[in-house]
Length: 300
Image 1: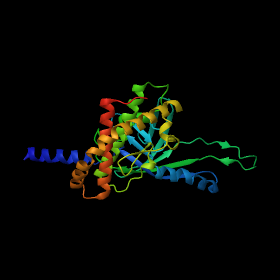
Image 2: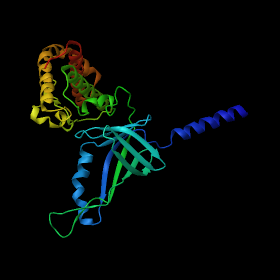
Image 3: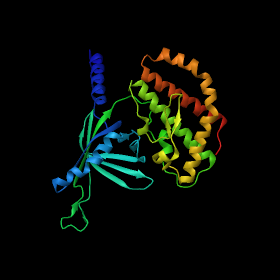
Image 4: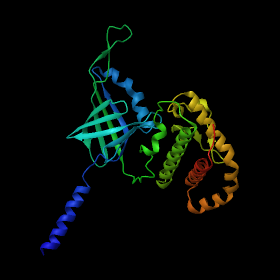
């Protein structure tokens, strides 16, 4: 009798441990509450609140102590995290800056962080009453419990290397690697969206010069790709990379269009949902474009 009881007790213990709330997942920030010393100033932060929600601001914490954070339209933050009691510390690389939070709530579905802010005053254009900076900032996040694999985790540093600001001008090979990494990111993003039956996708909210088109793929004008271009060392490198991408699409599009009828028949059998079928078609185009750039190359 002792052995079955021991096995049952062990199973219950493991189950209890596995249901303990953990920080190590992706959290989508769905609320920002800002308080100042004067209530009328609080509403001035509505834009910050709306921006965080619209552009999918996130924190992604990993078991190895690393993290990524940012949004579809902002630079990527990465570094290491540590949680001691309720004190969360983020050490940001390579700047060496530190962000500190107090964990107000941590459950399997919800995270609330209180940001440590400085108590200081700023001048207000000569008015007698000074403008007050935030005294209290609360970030609330909803857990994303999707089972990301290493290949599909488009929040990982591995799939976001293209978003890290270059520290010097890059060679043709390095620019090509940035493009390939960006394609890997888009392919993973589309794969997860399709798997989730996510419906319509607004690619204009992603920091990408690539967009969907009726024939499979489109490329924004360089001047409309500012967020993507900002990760390059300078405008020259960004323009070179944009040109490489444009030439690659022109060079390899005829081969893709030749494959298109067969591919469309295959996808029609795999996806009954028309929206997902369109996303799968776009994903297939990007996969073929990536493979051809990697194997055959493209020049500046």
